[in-house]
Image 1 (tube, helix red, strand yellow):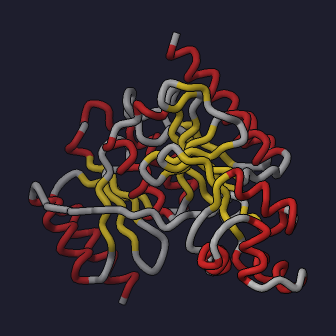
Image 2: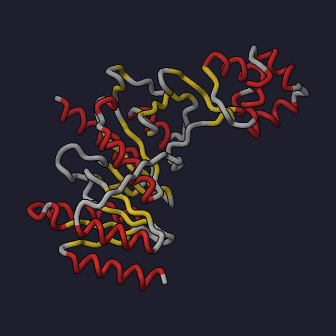
Image 3: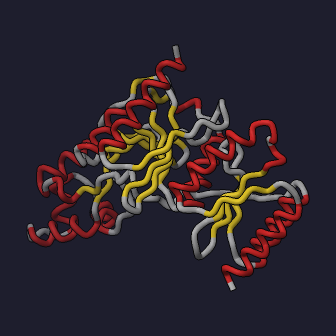
Length: 296
């Protein structure tokens, strides 16, 4: 039953992204517990999507992979789900799962097809709306109101108004309604699902074998960032000033290497990255040579 629901969600996502003009790829490796199910490209915007029935059940590894991949490839990452914390998701709300946006199919469809950007997001059980600091201040001045006068009309403190104008805090739904009555909805900042966010990534990379040690050393010497992914067809990503390098470790899963490489190629094509397969230590040395030739 769950597999059928997942397939239905996936089909809806692929259909709507294609209809919106995206070039999309459905990723099918590894067979179970993948971190990335869909990757898409529209103009210069890249998106990576994890599909699930209940976003609560996404593992820490899958979340970590999504974050690292989005950083490595300069992409936005989204989880598309029907439920969150065992409840049906509101099609007007963007939820947060450890820093990653979580939406349902209906919201995503409205976003890509009708360009309807959501205003409300959920964080730690609270429903909030972001303020656009510049527009908020411009509207306050246009209305001829001081910080204190506007605070009195909305029913908040003067400090809260100051924080709104400096983009420091979101507002509750009730406060947002009061603000809209006085200033209109243009002072709110919609959630942009396709804008890569600065997601905190804790990559405590500790080489566990000779290959990883050589890769890590090569990156460190040239000021590159090395990301290690666990549940995608790409095993490592090298990110520097130019296009990233996607590395597939042949030795890690030789029996399924054909499928793995095919799926990795899909990601490399969308991300515009160079794809390299490591079979032995000598291949790592070739990577070092490639870096020397392209970076210096």
